[in-house]
Amino acid sequence: MAPPDSLTAILAPAGTTGPAPPRPVPLLRVDGLSVFYGSHQVVTDVRFELDRGKSLALIGESGSGKSTIVRAVLRLLPGEARCTGCVAFDGQELPGLSERRFRPLRGRAIGFVPQDPGNALNPVRTIGAQAMEAAALLDLPDKAGRTALILETFARVGLDNPRRVYDSYPHQLSGGMLQRVLIGLAVLPRPALLVADEPTSSLDVTLQKRILDLLWRLQRDLDISLLLITHDLAIAAERADSLVVLKDGAVQEAGSPAAVFASPASSHARSLLAAVPALNPDRYAGLRARGPRCIGTDAGVASKIAVSSVTKTFMVDGKALTAVDNVSFTVPAGTTHALVGESGSGKTTMIRLLLGLEQPDTGDISVADEQIAGRLPGSLRAVWRRLQIVYQNPFTSLDPTWKVEHLVREPLDRFHIGTRRERAERVREALAYVGLGEHLLSRKPVALSGGQRQRVAIARALVLKPDVIVLDEPTSALDVSVQAGIVEVLLSLQAELGLTYVFVSHDLALVRQLADTVCVMHRGRIIEHGTVMDIFDSPRQPYTRSLLDSLPSCATGVDPLLHRRPEPIGTIRPTPRALTA
Image (cartoon, rainbow, N blue to C red; front, side, top):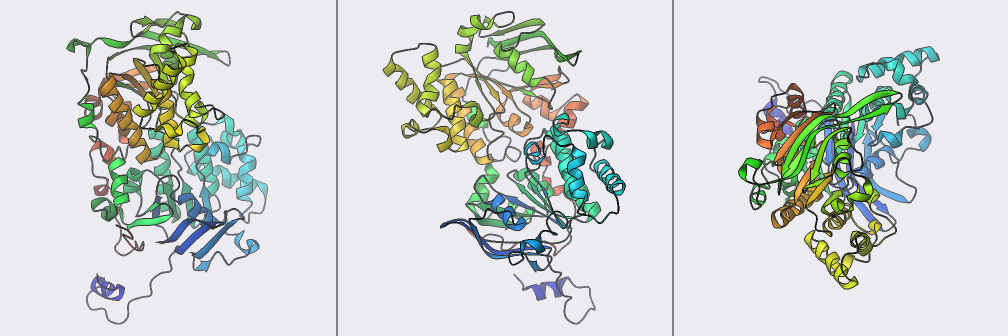
C-alpha cells in the first residue's frame, strides 16, 4: 500500500504542487489503550481514530471490552482500575487531566446515551427536573431560557408533546420515549462527541429504526461524531462509517464496513458474521429439514395448538382495554409458530392465555387435545406437564440460591415423577440434550455464563418431556454467537423429539431463521398470517411492511453496503485493519 503522502498526491487535483495539506486532528484518538483491574488485564493495546462528524462502531460480545473502553474515554472507570496508553479528545490527552479540568468536557463536549433508560433516569424526579441538570451546562441566563431549550430539544428528538414529557415521571413514558429523552439530554449541550452504548438493544424493531434514524439525523444536523457500542453487526454494517471488532479486550479487525464484511481477515469476525441472523437467513435450512415439518393440517399433521376466536379485555383506569381481539390460529405438531408485533400488540397476553395464566372472555384454546379455556388453575396440572415455557431472562427466572441440579429436577419433584435415581438420570439426560456437562450440576446461576443459564432454563423445560414449549424472547438478552448456539440447540431438539414451539419475538431476522409460520399482531388483532416465506417475501398489510422495512436491509435480502450514505475518500482511518488472523 502506498504511504499516506503518496496516496494524497495520487488523489490531489491535477496541476497542484507542493506538500499536501496537514491532516486534520481526529476528534477522538485511542492509541495503545490497556486497562488493568489489579493484575488482570481486560483491555490490550486498543487503537482507533474517529474524525469529526463521522461514526465508528465498537463491536463485540459480552466481555469483549467495549464498555471498559467507553468508560476509559469518559473517565468513569472504578478506582482500582489502571490505564496505560493514550486517549486524546480534540488533541488533548484525557488521562493526564485533573478531574476539575475534565469535568467541563463530560456532558458538555462528550455526551453519553446509556443502554437502559430505566436505570439511567431517577424514578422519583420528573423528566424536566433531570433535564435542567443538562441545561445547566450551558450559559443561559434564566430558567425560562433553559426550559425553552429543553422543550425545543425534546421536539427535535421526536417527542410529540414535549411539555407533557417535561412534566412526566419516567414510569409514565414508554421505553421508546425514555430512550429519546436520554438522547435529548445527551445532545442538549451540543457535544462534539456522542457515545451511545447499545441504545436500541431492548426496543422493538420499529422503535429501533426510529432511534437509529434519530441518532444519524442528529449526527448530520449538529455535526456530531458518534461512537456506537453494539453487538449487532447488521446495524453496524448499515449505519457506521468504520468498525472495530473486539474479542477479550483486543482488536481483532478494523476498517470500513465494506472491507470487513466483504473479506473479514480474522477468524473471530468471520464467526460473528456467520452468527448474525440478518446476514444468514438460511443458516439452519438443513437442520430444519431434518424434522417432520409439514405446514398446514391439510398435509395430514394434526394441530398441536388450536386457538379459536379468543378475546381478552382488561379494565384500566375504569376503561375497557381489549388486549386480544378475536384471535385464531393453529400450530401443526413438530413446527414453530411465531407471534410478532410491537410492544402492546397483545403477544404477551396471548401467551398467558395459552398457558392458562389468564382466562379468555370468549373463545376456545386447546393444547395437545387438552382444553385450556374455562378451566381453573388446579385442573391444569396435567396440561402444564405437556406445556412448558422458556422465559426471556434466565437470570431472573432461575432461583439464584439453587444449584443447577435442583433447578432442573424441581419439575420432576413437583409432579412426583420417578424414583430419586430416575430423576437424577432425567436431569443428566436433559443437560446432555442442551450441551451441558455434569460438572455444572453443583453450580449456581451466578457461576454460569448467560448462554449456560439459558441452556439450563431449556433443560428445565425439557425434563418433563413436554409436547409444546413456549419461547418468550429466549435469546434477546444474549450475544449473537451465544444466540446462534441456543437456536441450534432448539432446532436440533425439535428435529429429534418432534417438539412444537410457539416463539414470541421482536427480532424478525431471527423469526425468519427459526419459524415455519407467523402471525403478525397489531393492537390485539392478527392482521396477517402465513408461512415465513409468504410474510417476508410478499407482505400484504402496510403494518407488516413497516415492520419489515425497519429491519437492516441485509435482513430482507438487500446488501446494506449498497444502500449506505456516501463516504468521502480518506476520512476513515482505523488502525490497522486486521491485527490477528
